[in-house]
Image (cartoon, rainbow, N blue to C red; front, side):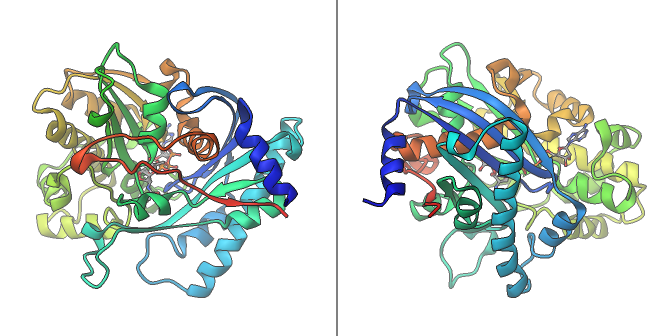
Length: 401
Ligand SMILES: Nc1ncnc2c1ncn2[C@@H]1O[C@H](COP(=O)(O)OP(=O)(O)OP(=O)(O)O)[C@@H](O)[C@H]1O
Ligand SMILES: CC(=O)N[C@H]1[C@@H]2OC[C@@H](O2)[C@@H](O)[C@@H]1O[C@H](C)C(=O)O
């Protein structure tokens, strides 16, 4: 037998696994690296986050990704080169983290790599009748990562979700359901990333009622306009710029005038829709093109909060009551968090540290959990009807030799 397959079999049969989860999101701020010990699988999963680091991307890396990120037409050569280059880069960053943590690659059972989303195209968003399907693309090839590190690598998780009828996202629902369900309270796990999304976990523990959905922009529009108007910054530090401005009601109304916000749940989206052009078009329609940068940022902050509230109202009625646990970089933005809390007065707010998982690590941890399920779990059956979540194992397996 191929010795790598024999090792894979041993890893799958072990009572626990040491996995590294990797996530690079829409903010392009860097690679999240989570070293996890996972015991058991499924609802019996016990997670220990042993190490976590966000390795910042050099500007050159961010600039290269931006050449192909969320654009309908790109250089195929650039995309081809980036796919291999990012796979090898992520492999090198894993080796750098292991060295800093005093660990050898042989001490890691597998790497679970999300890669870098470059384009997300659910059918309701691309609306091309000749392609009646959902699609998404993450680059950062798993074989390059496996060969560079010498570690078995699982990657490209979203394709199986789509092949089984999903939109390829949010995948958080699997990890949230396995790690954070509680009979004590209804919970909303709210991720404030470039795109905001939440997972509903009922206190009833009824798996059929569990779902996860994107809700609209999180940080992506805020970041884009901060970079444009305040080149020394890549985001609105602590929401101070937005706090100095005044939300503009006509612009907010124009920004919210899109079918996405009223579309039934679950749904996904991305910067392909919520782009700077989306904002500029809304400014033209509402006659607010000359808005001051702080008023624009104040309005975009309200947009992110309103998208979250409207999805919560769609799901739970006019007065949602749940325990909200936030994660993602947007939770560090007090102006955004206050705008959300104002719209959900019946909810309590904490972050996922209260549930034992570092908020900034949560997405990288998710991919370690997904890999653990692929290696040692059984397909998780969640949701029902339109909110049915594909009960599949996810991740392509790359052997290092
Ligand atoms: N102190 C802060 N004040 C305001 N915003 C912040 C702060 N810290 C982080 N952020 C926001 O969080 C973003 C990074 O968070 P995160 O890593 O969750 O984004 P992401 O990787 O794009 O997430 P996702 O993959 O879910 O899209 C930053 O770009 C910024 O918008
Ligand atoms: C296509 C894609 O990369 N989507 C991301 C994005 O970032 C946040 C939100 O949109 C979420 O749907 C998803 O990532 C998280 C990890 C998810 O799949 O749950």
